[in-house]
View (cartoon, rainbow, N blue to C red):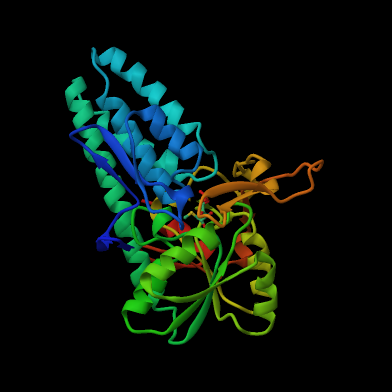
Length: 360
Ligand code: MRU
């Protein structure tokens, strides 16, 4: 993804690994759109914290961070093979216990684990872990590029598309899931307009998706989450494309950022196609229905307070709610398969009840 910087247009990924120094590097997302900064995480505990405090967020980006964090933790180990696997378990659990909903995190780490298990020395396991983590991250970017190829065909010239949260480049290693078809459409010369739900409480839409679309020169407007139904009823929205943090392979139920379910119901009511874009790492083949998906409950402060720039350009936290009130803050909801028109994957577009075709 290209980013406009003081030095000109630069090419960036959301996250990458500095092998020589065993450091995970990533874009510091809470500072966007006001400041573009890269941070370096020196050990797996710092990397785990970056997932927990959402320095990095978004299903695919969390998956790649988990994979790199695991390799980083393995690489730092000195000792014999038996102790290595004990250490591995500790690293794995620390990373896993950061955020519960996005299945890419566990899928990424399990991929690394499977690939390194054949190693018969510590050095061999470390090497295999690093290669696997890099492969997983590269595949994430490639899957998103393929989602773009397939999804672009759904977008007609002059389409008006609504999206929720940030399933963009920043939520993955590159391209994004929901945004990849939009970027492809734009590059293929189609004229598009995007309604960007602001996505309370953390405002990933207003802060991140809007920033990304600006970098790509795509026409868009941020709307309050509550405005989506108004525009749908007026026939101003032609289609909805969102991402997912966990999609149940057996049913096609989709967990995504809180507020997605509302949009899906509104879209069905208004006869608007509702698409979900996912790489393969977002598929969960273990759970039997969306009701079983663990939903992260985040700090109520995210609802009661907001972050922004004051008039002097300093980043500031302010209270926006009544001081005696409490808040509830579920971070995700589940959209049942019946509301979903199609699921855009790297292998094509499927009905929610056809996902079993994708099982290897
Ligand atoms: O809480 P976040 O920001 O990690 O949530 C992830 C999301 O941005 C969305 O749910 C997104 O639509 C799917 S992630 C590709």
